[in-house]
Length: 395
Ligand code: FES
Image (tube, rainbow, N blue to C red; front, top):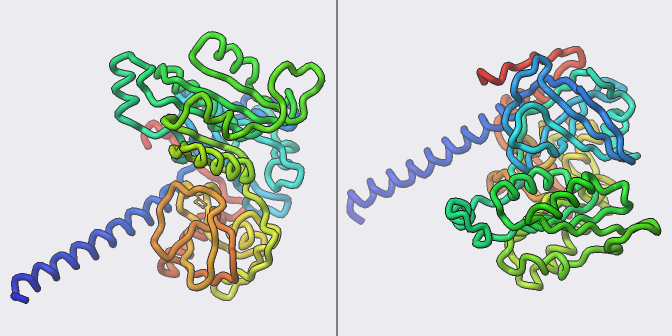
């Protein structure tokens, strides 16, 4: 090999190394920025519908809120009775076109950690600490849809089929508004237990009567007066309006997502993405080790949940696969995905909020101890720490 070829090889290797290093730095900075951004919003309206809590939030001084995209969520931060930090991500229900308020719809889970506390403690006029809107679950950007919109030929756009199970409707509602505004054909198949569990049912029926929205609500436990479809939705029903060309977005429980995705794949529908609103709890017992700390997978919905339940201090933020804060390196063992992640990590890393252990698992922090400690400090502010209001017009 000539000396020129050797020099070129060295330059190529150096470029690769530098590119990876720069990307890694960006990723780390992105994680840290995601964890730092907080805003304090006023809860100006609070309503309850069955076991769903509806929250309307606005800026305390009436300023415009940061713009959100359809499908994004806000993370709420609170503390449990012992002063330990608690946080959960909740999808934005409000139309993302406006920036005057955010609306969240939260299902009160009897065995949950944060939602019963919220139901008990929240009152109108209260200030809540929230993240900025984040997340990447939403319709794909496509040239075909853009051209159809520009040429005002909506029928040429890819049909959008949204499938909701229960509270999984929340990220899909802003997508309906956005698709209707773009005159894109959109279908909503909405599975719930009872009529009272159907969020915005009347509004959706109105939209369906006036626009190109096709709306199919399905109840599994209807009362005698329910005139619509009852039972469980099937993949054939979901595929019927859009066919193989449609884009499918599903937000439901793990069980419903798995069944529908399998059925849609069998019917030749492959443009399917999902977001889970809850992962099933593990029925298997595997030891999870991080340094000297120990946890067990049994009864937990993710590796992150298992670690936190055992008091192991690990960084996390969205708990939904969109921020990358919970990434850890796998030293040995296996795990499987229970949540679809929108954030890519290194080949030997996992987002612990998105995986379940499928064998004994040994984990390590993906980068230096100093960074990990910095992340921990970020995630675990002292209970008395007050978070400043951020003026996001300048952010
Ligand atoms: S906590 Fe955000 S990706 Fe896991």
